[in-house]
Amino acid sequence: MTDTASAAPHLAVAPPLRADAPWLAPLAGYSDLPFRLLCREHGAAACCTEMVSAKGLLYHSPGTRELLATTPPDAPLEDAPLVLQLFGADAAIMRTVMPGLLEQGFRWFDLNMGCSVPKVVKTGCGSAMSRDMDNALAVARAMIEVAGEGRVGFKMRLGWQAGEETWREMALRLQDAGAGWITLHPRFARQGFGGEARWSALRDLVAALSIPAIASGDLFTAADAVRCVRETGVATVMFARGAMNNPAIFDEYRVLLAGGQPPPPDADRLRALIRRHLELALAHSGERTAMLKMRTFVPRYVRHIPGVRALRNRLASCLDRALLEELLETHLTPQAFAEGGDSADTITTVSNGESRP
Image 1: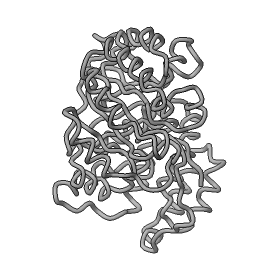
Image 2 (image 1 turned 30 degrees about the horizontal axis):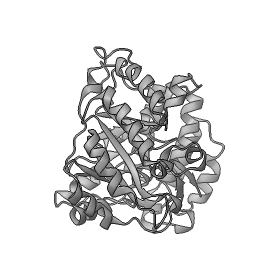
Image 3 (image 1 turned 135 degrees about the vertical axis):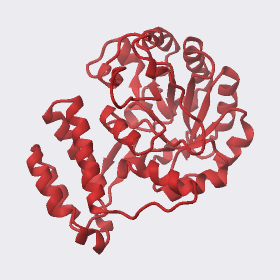
């Protein structure tokens, strides 16, 4: 990882806020460096890190620093533009850790005000911040004071639960504080990922703000995202579950937005994508760590292939590159793609970066 701002000029590159510049969302357990690089190769215009605990940075918690890993300045594929997402509900801690992040070269930040995972909200962080708006604004101001106006975004929900809508007031107050953009996942925290995202709130947010608004929520396919942009007028979209299932969604979205037609699913392209992901994972970690990561990602990539349950069962114990290659050749065939998908094997995301079959 880079150590100083002068040694990390790529971290100063501003994230674009245009409809044809889709973002990768911050995804706990997923948006690590290899996955970000894979998504960039497939059209992601900006990427967010996994969410990083401000308290973990302050107390040097094991593993927290690893979440800051990015590419060196001479890397052939740069990890830029990069937005570092933090979570925390203590303004003093934010004010303490932010200067060190700037010294390391980070320039663009996001505050997680939307995660609904119990272990996060019970500490007053994530979507629980909607229940104490004054404190949320204090944390936001602490980040903006150090990073500078326009360099911090805020990812939020509609509010804690139905009847407690805080998104409009929160967004306007954040804008007044110097926010650079607002990302809205239009569900309540208590909904988790249940029900449907209320895209009409995105349209209302765009009308209320003078800074860019980014859409999140129910962007499972490129077509979903194009429809969202056209219906709501948001500056751009942030893919989360859609990217976890298909890193090529960014290119597909750009093609559709421009009036083209993306190519249909193809066995050869999917095998190539998985092999490239493994190559990137091996380049940035040991083989065991890389293979463990692939056991998390590959079941999502192949969820629509008949017989995927058998493949997932074998992947559950796969720590060997040769075996992974054998599984790809055996299961990811043109014939399997021609037969269509198996909805019984769909994976459903139930929290920010956590999933279950």
